[in-house]
Image 1 (cartoon, rainbow, N blue to C red):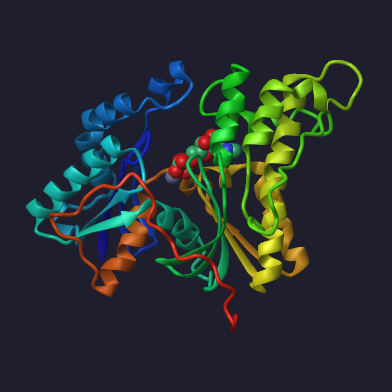
Image 2 (image 1 turned 120 degrees about the horizontal axis):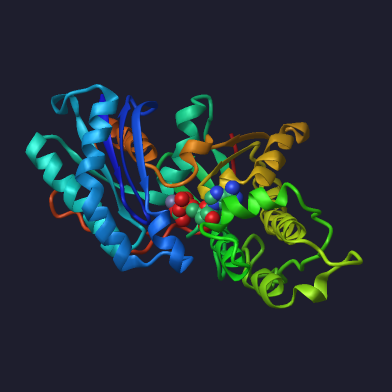
Length: 345
Ligand code: KG4
Ligand code: ZN
């Protein structure tokens, strides 16, 4: 079965051709980063206009690269939630037109579920249930995952998303956009002990696995001198490394708690921040503690349509279909609150 995936929820226009949910025949990603870079952040109106300009070319390229004819497409899967509404509408409208003209099913996909599904495309051995770590520019969540479309939230951010903080720290220091990969690179040449940035203090009774990043953001951007440890003047590399160490430690501390309270023995990480080398190194060390860990391949961490085509196949196989009334939604669906399962397989 060949599923064509379409992704346009933020600042990447992407079209992919995926066979049987895992074999990526093409995954064309057009990033708008250069257009948004002068503003050091995404300008939503600009994003939707740029999607509109390129989407049909990206589609043609994806089909050509896959070496298939349009007639071989069995379904069209498209991100319809959550994201920037104007950007989502471009991909969704294109998908609707395409599905209707090819006479194939249309499948609306939740972008968050697709990020968590992405590692499955590289590691077919991943078994449910597991602790999912979804870290991106828009989300910071620890989730209990029991199937490709069944997640419940164990912890989420009460303020900023982790990727957003990487972007804001880079912006405040004029390091460029997007901040995540830049901080990651700078940190490689720096000392992560030059500053001892604070961990958030949340009311534990209410937020046992929630995250907060606004305090770290303020500390790094406005109060860094207060947290300096070494003598002399730390370099930008030292600042990046110290910030990154704390940003990732906030994640891993709660992740460890989630593993402990759920009793689950595997962790699966997806989303743009799952590309972070420091986080990936930590996840690689988890098997030493008896925990299996899987990170999405780098090409499937940041936004891409292959993960949309991948999870779209699962819906297709189950018989799920969307119709022409499918709408775009800027917000994530309300997930069920986490309850510890009585039996953990
Ligand atoms: O998943 P994604 O492409 O878009 C959303 O769904 O939000 O994630 C983009 C985010 C940006 O905030 C970017 O700075 C961050 O992922 N990111 C990273 C790295 N690569 C991308 N953050 C930390 N380290 C990285 N290597
Ligand atoms: Zn994303």
